[in-house]
Every structure is written in structure tokens, then in C-alpha cells.
Image 1 (cartoon, rainbow, N blue to C red):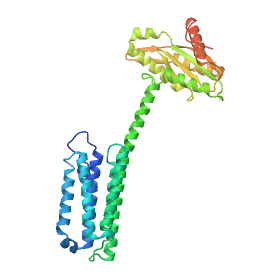
Image 2: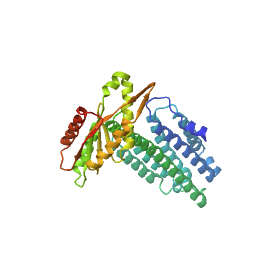
Image 3: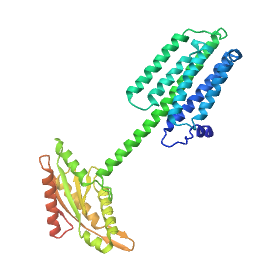
Image 4: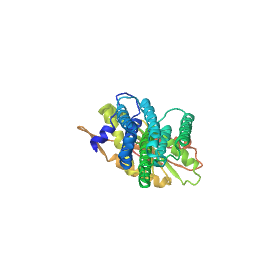
Length: 356
């Protein structure tokens, strides 16, 4: 089955052609050919003796057109298949009779009008209307036609064979095209999620960026039932000295290490963002200033006791934090400004502390 599957899925030599349509046509040719063989087997040798050229000609056409799908572009292959199917229907109804159900193959053409054709929707409806017209003309020409050599039992078997072929064809068409659309939709959703993540995330640390943190504070502001929220602005002490002494790569490692400690030690509900440079903003929902002070002080101690190893060097850092409360009546800018002013106070009065 693997070799057969690879053969059917083989791409055509032309670039920028939709492979789904071509593979679907190949499967349809196979389904129709197998149903054709079963119809002949059910009806017996008499149908071949009565319509030898018609039957042999359609078999050769089926095989030849199947082979051409590996060499023609998509549009010619699709047009040839539709023409072949119309010819097949109108040639086989006189062979097996109206009740054998050959006219049901028009449903396949109708499906292809919507799934496999390109262009405006109005054109697709026009194609469908034309298929309906041809179907009505077929009723007028062949409706009620019977063949004496087809018994009642054979007639029922022919119906089962052809309606089964049509159902299988519809299933394959639906699967092939829905699969392609679902895959495209999933890729688009993943791409959009990735874009959204990149737009809200600091690339170096993996934390939220300033924009996302500000959006979160805006959502807190809009939520009338929010409790007290604490906001802490933190800054790495003497970070410029780290860059000057050990290089910017070491500085990046320090930032990533600090970000990792914050994510590990802060509550899962906390929103942590890289505010810019070596500054970080920590938002603690449903947490008053006193409890937030304990949490941030614990975080400060953890950072102070961490040794960052970079090649042969061991780097120890400290951080200073400014902490304030953000209630629903507070202004976002004023809260951030207050936290920043407390941070500045801590920086100018000893560093390595939490100012609340």
C-alpha cells in the first residue's frame, strides 16, 4: 500500500500547481474504473458483445487520462476529467439502464465545481447550474431506459455498485479538501499565536514586555471587582559594571538568570515583565503592599545569594525594588511613577533593598 500511495501522491512536474486536486482526480479515476469493472462483471458478457467499442474505449480513456494527470497542469486535468465523466455517464446509461444509477456520478462533478475550481463564488454557482441543466437533459434523454438482459437482481447490484462509488468519491473529495483547508487554518492560527507571543514577549528573557504589562494593568483598571494589586519596579544594581567587566554576553546571561529566578520565586498569578534594559516590573494581583513586601524581599534575598557562573567567572548581583499599591481608583501612570520614584530612592540610598 505504501508504494501505491506514493505513486498516487506523486507530484506533477509543474511548479505552483495545487497537488490536492491532481491527487483527488487520480483517486476518482481509480474509483470509477473499479466500479466500471464491477458493473461489467455483474451484467455479464452480453454487455460487452452489445457495446464493445464503447466499453473498451471508455476503459482506455480512463487509463490514458489517469496517466496524463502526471504530465498535465491542474486545470487541463480537471477539465478532461469532467468531460470524461459526462461522456462516461451518457455512454453507460444505454449499456446498463437508467436504474443502474450512472446519473448519480453528476454529484461528483458538482462537488468538484465547489472544491476544485478557482474564481468568484458566483462562477461556482454558475458551474453548478450548468451541471443541473445537463442532469435534467439526461433525464429527458434517458429517463426510464431499461435493458432486457439486466435482471432484477443485477439491476439492484448495479445500483449498489454505482451509488457506493459515488459515496466513496464524495468522501475522498471532502477529506482531501477539508484536510488541506484545516491544515492551512491550523498553520495560520499557529502563526498568529506566534506573532502575538512575539509582540508580547521580551525575546531575551522570555518575560512579558512593557506593552503586555501595561495592557494587563489596563485590564485591572477596567475590572471593577479587582482587589488590591501591588506593583514593584526592580533594577539590577551596577549592571553597567557587569557589562564593562565581563562583556555584554555575560550581561545577557545575568538578565536571563534574574528572569528565571523571578519566574520561579514569584506566584504563578504574578505578571513579570522586562520593563527595559535591566529594569523589571512585577505585578502581584490580589496582594496588598505588606504581603507584597514580604514576597519581594524574599526575591531580593534569593537574587543576592545567587552565584552566576560564566566560564571561569562567578558573578554576584543585587537588586533594588520600589514597591507600591495599585487600586482600581489609581492611575496606571501614577502607580508606575510612584514605584519608579521609590526605586530611585533605594538606588540613591544604599541599593539592594525594597523601598515601600
